[in-house]
Image 1 (cartoon, rainbow, N blue to C red):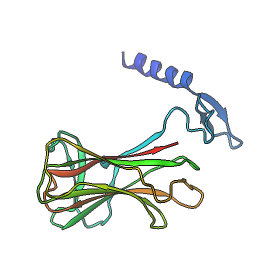
Image 2 (cartoon, one colour):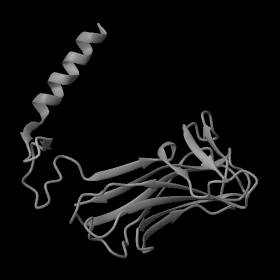
Image 3 (tube, rainbow, N blue to C red):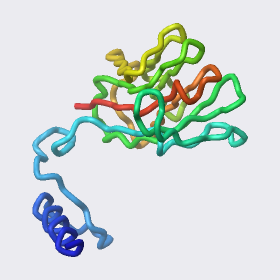
Length: 184
């Protein structure tokens, strides 16, 4: 049964994409919908999860949250520190225009706040979202920033990163979950 399912998945992937070979014999996947000016295919949201992030400071402890206050599986960092940072690279399509940056975060703590920043490798902050430490809820918060400082993606000169900041000490009740960049 497992082999049949894997075969069906492989056939589905083959049917959903058109394969082409580049000059160096590497397979290039060309999206079916390549009518947009930057060939985004059928998607316009790029996401990263805190589970795939690493700590900004190598001395900070990181922990996976499996049954946190909001019910999401996530990662947190910086136990015993006043601030903890998780960093995740995000691959955005070259020449795309960023229209919004959003973050999903759990903040069920009156003493800890969460923020997420979209950074470019030259140190430019493109967007920031976050919670306040005086607010707490067992529901996840989604914060959106539609004001993007430098909206056009330039992969030939820069790489892009999401910084997830945890300020305070209650890491099991306040933690980042995921970040999303909407492009066109």
